[in-house]
Length: 383
Image (tube, rainbow, N blue to C red):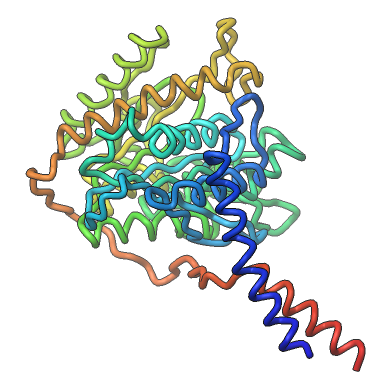
């Protein structure tokens, strides 16, 4: 009997998404809410609906599972022309969970590329985009619901201490720089080992996959709220090989934002701005073989000129997300100009993929699993 019921569950799992897809398409796709900070569930729902409504241009991929079993999802965006092997801009947001504006800006970027495709088709003519709008969902949920200034993951470190700083967990001079990196109770804790956190391993594996397929061009990590464009190195004060390119792109972004909103964005090599330390995703991306790597520290200043840092009021979310999109669009436009398809790229990979790869998502439909497990349990009880 349970096999029959599982079969019914399978049919429901197949038919329900098809019906939902048709309904979403009739509604013209999901509407992006920027009048408040979305919950984890709200972000996942928006991504699911958008992927259903625009399946020819956006694929939503499960790329990992967190310590608390939340999905790490990546939106893979193309113009739908069917050309494979295009170069890629890889963007992530919310490595630091208290930076609530960064998922909003990442979701608006997805919206601009997918829903407002016609206005931004030049950014997808020869490039695809891979976007992780919520790279630290466990920390984000904890920050929103329990301790708003929470920065890290939620993995236990022992001694009633929790969490690792994902932007200190990458294998570039790991744990080097200042004592707090080694303190399991500090918000700068670099973890028990390089890539101890599944979230960092997931970002790393995406980087390596793009480099190995010779598609990697620019890594862009969204943070708040320093109003800066940072480029490598963080672990070293030496200039990167293409320092002038990084500086030119950063200044181009700053100029576009200033012309649009009047916000002043500064451009820095991070180590010369705030000293050296290891473990950052930005440094790792360049070492992994991306020719361009940046952190965009978005503004946290409201229209009333008050500096709200990580938590601008809801009335300012749309304005700040739109301002950030101006910068993200400028990053992309300049990167595409600098690295057209005609320009050969030497992906100088200076790091190897470690063995502790992030777990692979097998794609087992959760609805099918839930139905089958429930009826297996029911059968065992009745017997």
